[in-house]
Image (cartoon, rainbow, N blue to C red; front, top):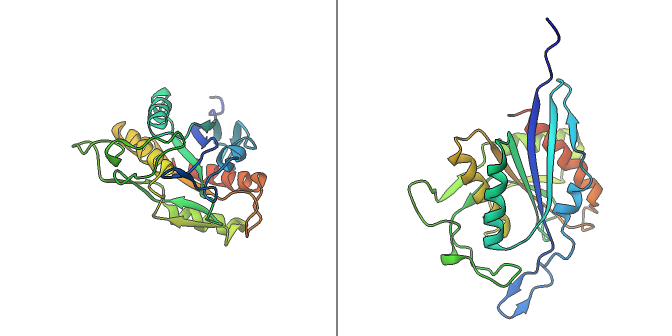
Length: 224
């Protein structure tokens, strides 16, 4: 008998393009992100990674998703339909948070802010209430265990969990992804990471964020 072939884990990772936050007729420059770190960091990640166990990770990178409610719904649904991913990691920017945040859940309702095109979510909800639509979905990954692992690898003080993904385009995307995974039987595990902008009090660079997110990818691959 020949040697067994190493297992391959297929992981999708996404990021957003630039976006403008609007407050009525005014543009909120303090929260707008002209260069989105969630996509910039993805460009530093390799296409393949290997775990010490021999497991290979095939990483599909999709940066620059357009930050609109309906556009994201179509894009995320399409990406989940492309194949049975073992894991999906969505990344988004949180300009006022200094740490990388591991988001634990996503909610269905109360999306009140306009998207980057100035459009609002229909009835402030991702999907209408229905039997196959929960009020919230929780990630199947153990976020606290992930943060503990990252801290042990030298990221202490730079990562944390969060139970509030912001009720904006990031949480909207997370909810769609978690629901798509649930409708497919829960084979795919889904995670959302909020990342800071470059600089800030922790002096992040896009390359530094990519290094941390690469560690997240490897941890997730070991959990599926």
